[in-house]
Image (tube, rainbow, N blue to C red):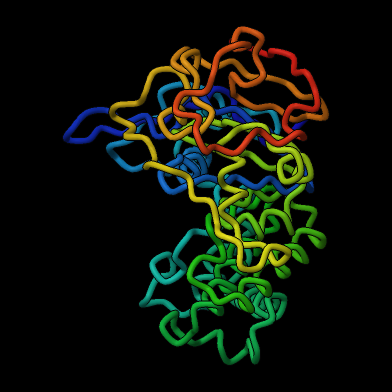
Length: 349
């Protein structure tokens, strides 16, 4: 049984213009000790997914349907008091911006110790000793002294290390890292990723890594979930996603990455803009931007199984679409051979 399972999750928000479905029918699972990368453009629903798992949706938001199973128990049926015991202890989260996530008027030591006192029942002295131990683990120099410092006295990379120390102080079973390397230089990014990998090996935690950096995903994740318009459009192992992408959106994300073996070549951007969640297009949400768009794409898109745990939503692989020509197909690249190597099985309409 998977450690964390999300089934048909739908999370909406009330706005002045109407109700927005930020996550709409998302399903996935995470096994113990594994790392799942969730990728997609801004607004695709990645962060809302993580906040839904933690039950930290804003007041104007609502989880309308679905299940979030942790060790077989549905977190959506837990009371707020029960969730407070789970957050930080069993499921921990590293938020996007450590400067706004850390309390500016409390020392670093107090903030780390608070979690261990609350969840592990440590007294004040033992909690501070634990905080020193965690700062050592995340390689912060002179941790006994830095324990008394405030967040503004740390650099961005050091603050992110503190957030990791806080998140891992209670040995959680699941760690959700929401853009943990955003706004950090490349050297610090590599150090943070290496640190998370070391912590995972030491604790055996499962990691859900939310990021737009496909380089980080390729380096750290066994499985990859690609989101667009609030739902999954492709899922598979990192090898399958990077070597044999099926969904044109995934292809576009990979084509927009600079490559050392193609120095000087022009990057291929994804045309258009992400969808307006208040006015989603019929059928495939990516169709208005897709270079392979066909008339059939205006219908609800089924999920196709390409084997080895690789699934995608795209009519390119449907027999109904045979003979249909892509709309405005002039000067568009052809589908890679690897993308049509296997005949898929339709999983669900």
